[in-house]
Length: 409
Image 1: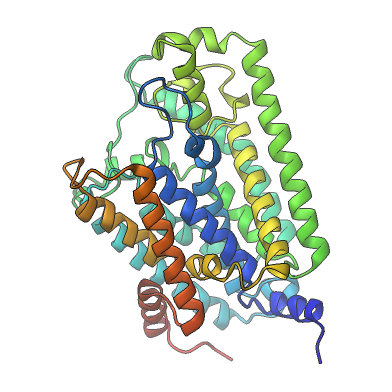
Image 2 (image 1 turned 45 degrees about the vertical axis):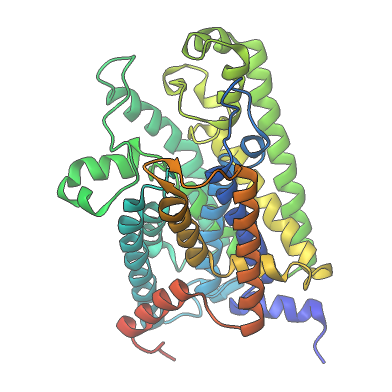
């Protein structure tokens, strides 16, 4: 008989599914649903709500980091299995075809689901493009990927800051962008679409490879080992606390609050904007922007804080499933079918729940969120019991296999 720890290490090395990774992805999915339903700032006072404080910026970042982890596990997982040593050129080429097809399907779904106008910054098109950007890096090991991640964290905020300010018509005006999630009709204006995707939109792809490379590096580690899991939890927690503390100190010691107060009108609204990244503050023009961990801003401190949170959550979930495996099974199942549940909740928000931004029924946000969470966990439990892919996951998998052919031996 193989011991549980040995089995975990073995499955990690072969790139098989790890329940802790799916549990973390399920948590990211529920976090994104939460900020899509519950306001991140109080409409009356401007204070950050519990949803904004917990999930704003962190859930989407966790989702992107886990995309990288999933790619690494798909292409071999830990050790040499994911590097050039054990994969032939034919097999790497096959992986690239499968991932490219999946990315194309996800992008297509995203371009159409954005037409629902659910009042949500849909991440699917960006998510699919990230998969395409990962293709040249599939043979790299953990160290090389971590170097790429560190370099991207160091360089991309500087380039992003420079481009954002260069593209502004004036200091008081934002740069040109779509002002909505990418839709199929936007293909008619490829220049603006590309600018929005990479620089000016909701999830600037000039920044987000930092999350992807971090996740791919993590996926090359022996995630089934207890020591690795505890190290991820410790390093992630320390990083999250330190980066948040640096931001708090900068706010207290600099005059950034005085410079930003005219944009909000009150201290509560200003603090709420800083804590939730609600896009009301033009902080990208401020000289201390790089040191503020404000969600969705893409500063050095924002990337470091959200990456640290993602690493800590991944470590925690990998640890918890050792002791609470079946209790967490619904969350694990939900995290194993994120595309289906993400699109499903957009359909509810865009068609059944809202028409032109107005609710069809007087249902409290908290009640709607409860329905969505219960439905997601119920679907996740069913998925675990049936051991079947979600409908959209089956679509992307089938399309990839159909166009790439059988995996080379």
